[in-house]
Length: 100
Image 1 (spheres, rainbow, N blue to C red):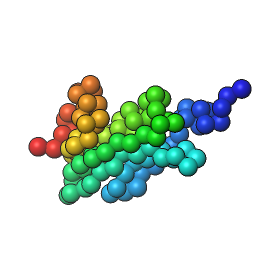
Image 2 (cartoon, helix red, strand yellow):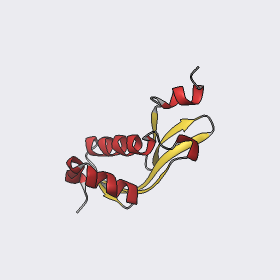
Image 3 (spheres, helix red, strand yellow):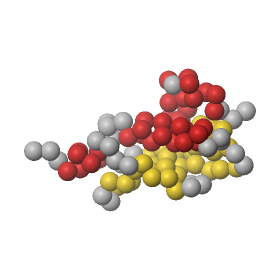
Image 4 (cartoon, one colour):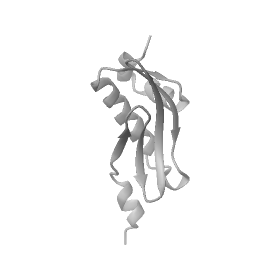
């Protein structure tokens, strides 16, 4: 029998709190990617995934979604968070969105 938490992890919806963070809520747990915004540049500061949600590519999904959304809205970004920086190194198609 499938664990409801595991089932929900298959495709949890990513939420966006404008000007602050992208997050996935699962019960009382929240994985998030926080950022600050200056003009048309988002500075991705911190990625956090609760221990119960780790190992399921949650951070990768959050970062990919956030960067896609950022570029779609015509923003540039700064990868202050080391995880976001590594993600961009591994996915060079996002380098076009780096702020100067």
